[in-house]
Image 1 (cartoon, rainbow over the protein chains, first blue to last red):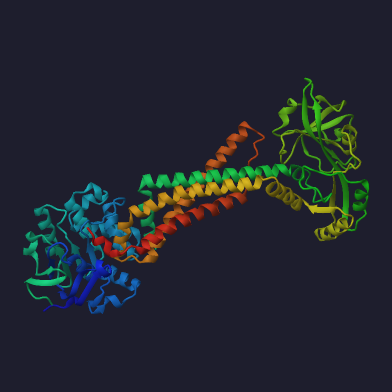
Image 2 (tube, each protein chain N blue to C red):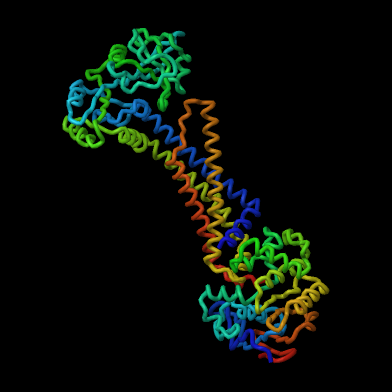
Length: 232
Length: 378
């Protein structure tokens, strides 16, 4: 078995208080390993995006712990946690969250700029990442001039620019047609996933299930089924 | 941090419509603020025109004098006493009065006459035409070529007029540091001729101009003058007293301040709302940056740099536009009382930075509150 990239133990999360309280996660435990592409699937409202938020260190759980490469991330200070996200975790958001006022290359350069790399060097590296995702000729265009699939690839290039150990992807195919979506995830599996990297994908698109190493199904804030493999 | 600031800069300037709206708001506020304050400073300088133009280091006057334009006659013994005080190098009288001049076409024009000490002509202006010695000639006057000069029908050397049925003749045309506030042309003559031409009260000396032997003598001279029941002020103190009078006792200063405050509020509301909208429109991007690993300090620096950059550019544009407007106005209206000084430039800068600080405060609060997890809410 490969090394654990992320270990979640007894993670619980709820929103609101009293009668308005909604439980999103009910003591979920799971592990994600280097070298695997782990899917978290389930219907809307099952808690999979909340789980991804907790795992990636952007949403504090109410109970339980999350360890990234052995570090309990929710015991870190906000600045330490931001630093950990910057160096260990790459994000591909459902809505891409590309900056429309920047060029594609500048968008990709953002993680490197956050890592204090000089601007010109970051832009130059960003062009290399864009070459990897096949968008060299789009480097100087704003993202709004790109198609949905191209924007998704820019988002992936940006996530990769952080050189993360863990890549989290939230509904990576939601804004794309079937073939493009499958092509994007295939690209991630073939070009980005390796023995030293873990990819966690939240999706409800069963047309990309064939690309998963393991699939964990969530329902009502719990892991309800393991479609493929083991929970941890 | 340099890269983050460049990122903030690009996010700001590439949003051309918002950036333009912000610049217009701040530039508008700066122009209004500077215009109001420049007018005030220009008026204050003109209110002290006599003090600037004569430029004596010390002025002895009646304690009831509130401004340079409202002298109260003093008896001759004040001059004699000043001349005999230890620490005084020399002291001379000066007369300042207003009357009507009858011009060649028969019309009357209010004028200000300044009578300089007959012996020394201390405080004489710089002449553009004529010789200052000609002031000793019969009926001689020197006219100041300022914004009010055309009101005397643009006189030249040799032009005649009448003051209280006395003949007057222009023997020189002078340039001075500052024109007067009240829109009356200024004529210089000798002290004795001024007394001869203008109806006089019992006491005739408007001010005694004093040259102290050294700066260290100033406090001693002040004490001696005070013991006589009069007051001695340095040039700067007299200017300040005049400014204080107009600022606090005429309502002018309060009105100017109210206008400046209203301008500040207008500028703040335009720029503040636009900047806050700019931050709100980018709030998901700030959340994305937070999720990617930007810390709060970096995000705050981004917002502050955006606000500061906009404020400084707007300030520069505002100063430029205001200077241009004043220059154009002075070309058309030479007596236009408006002057940009370091004081109002400094005050304008402080107000603009305040606008930037308040505008960014709400944006910073919003950004600090945003949870990075919000980026996952599709």
